[in-house]
Image 1 (spheres, rainbow, N blue to C red):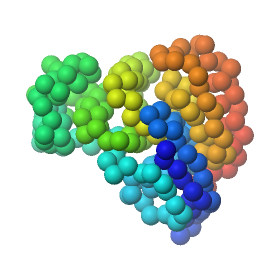
Image 2 (cartoon, helix red, strand yellow):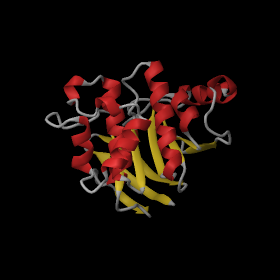
Image 3 (cartoon, rainbow, N blue to C red):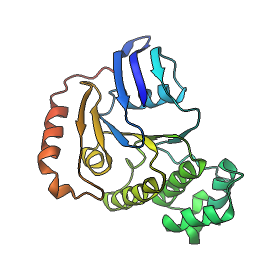
Length: 226
């Protein structure tokens, strides 16, 4: 189980985290929820080794898959070549399989400039799963998408997650995304944790009480510094 123990992070003009301690269950999806500017992205970067910090983190896997807000595909490679570049030893059969699941098999020979934003994000998700990290870090990968496409990609993501049940830390400021995806929701500034017991797939209309509770808690967070 990944653990943060009294972690501190500051920039010259602002303190982001002070004595932050929390844990993330193995093989579950934890959503880190909070409004823009509360330090969610900074937290993922610290776990990934992209940001320095003080304190201690335990049981961080060596192999980490990171899905960013932007797709970060290489523009000079086709969709399939982007997958092959990250995972050179993966079989063609496995690439075809994941492209089929994501309904991208017919687009595999197109370059990123020829794909829509949602299609590029599907390739980014496929790339992370093919890389097969022991820990998945997801930084608001659906934030720029319209609602219908976001719901579809969440469905794709859960389908892929069920194959291998990886540990996932999913950062969002969207309450609905957290409810649809999480086994555990962490409210970052208060360090409060909420367990969700419903199985996937979930229906938002059946989670209205939790949704209202989360929105109320976020409205009461107060001023954010990060």
